[in-house]
Image 1: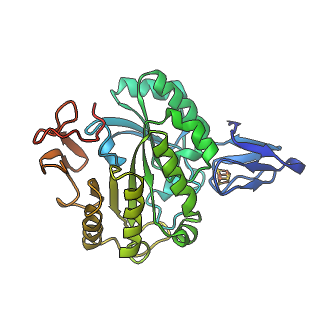
Image 2: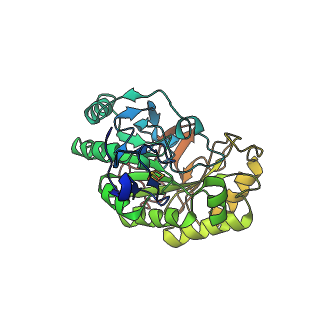
Image 3: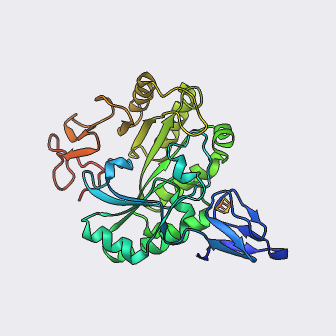
Length: 330
Ligand code: SF4
């Protein structure tokens, strides 16, 4: 354990956490609901500094990031814990579980492993990396020093000041935008919508490559109105942001039926009327799988599962019409 960042002391050895909008005040000996920070004798400690619950090499398409170094592997690491408690969490055993077995690691070990394994960098993923704040920040600095990239897969539920501290080290992020309905965030995720929207804007303003993912859950966030509001948000912010609609499977405390293909295809068609880059995930089939040039329709990135074949010119231009496409290539 090391002392955490972003907190202040209160009377009677209580501490106030400033990291995320939950805004916990913790009594001595208590741990926050994220499971990552605790009050030890009046000081906030970061519980999982240098502790991993999962590590492995993934194609970057699995994050999902489709327009950032397509076809490249990235070393993906996680610690236990999350500051949201989504009833449908697809990774609940590591995000919400208690007492998971962890492996000790260090900043140097992770950076060296990324270099050795020919990874483009490190993806902080699977649970919520922003509440692994201190270790992600310290690792991300060294990853940059080694000439590699940092990728976050995040719920975006962080206060703006700590986010500003870490963003200079972040190159790309996939951010979950779970719904455009604040009540959904409050009831289903125990969170709020506005801080997530604000974080997305902050990532974008900082020049981070961002892609958004929306997990469609039947009867909860899959109405035309909700889908259209999500599309409006992306279109207003930047039409070049890729939007991934993903299929939900029953998990943890949610037993709604799995997302039918027809729902994903409906969302895809509505979004494609407004946005050039729309994808479908967790579902087979050709719709929303490949990337075509919006100018001439030429296939520029073909995908099979998580494997990608990049057909763009090396300088990012379409081989069909020579239009420059907004992709970050290796
Ligand atoms: S990071 Fe954890 S302890 Fe801090 S406010 Fe959020 S939930 Fe509470």
